[in-house]
Length: 220
Image: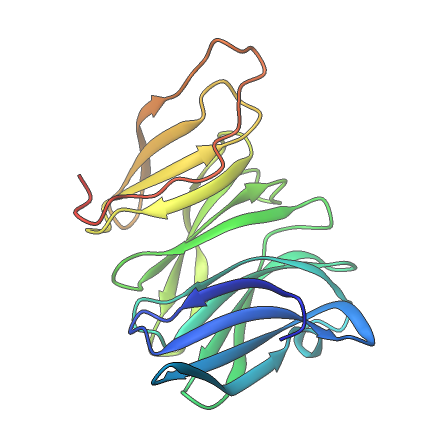
């Protein structure tokens, strides 16, 4: 590997995804490599050059998320001349290909966090500077046609660092930055996102960042 940025396991624990710089001679242009765990070793089975799908140039990869069934990978990328968007990739065990993208805005937009709903029907996107005016967007995923639909709902709450569905898919925890209220709980019924609670230290007028939010496995 050449300077891996991120690593993540597929849901079945069979594959490891890593984001690496393209080559030692051409740093700064990331691509994805997927390795299969065979016994106690990792064997590369697929790679994908993100520069191919966005020739304007990718500044960096913000986050990658496997879909719950392990067939898809959502990637938030910083395209230097085309704003930030979300790429939908598919992985069949031996190759990676691009299926769809979500364009959230121009170069001032940032997608910091992604998370699939537990049933794989929705993708939650968190960041700042979105063209919609929201910092959270929920997009439906059409599994038949393998494309994202239009935004189902969203919320304008201030910049978002982290976003995570609970195990039953009814609630979403959101971590903010540069805001007094730093962790929010939303309820999602399939069409509407509703704020239910806000917690966090509010003594500092500037607020402290919530770097990460995660549910424990039972979702309590």
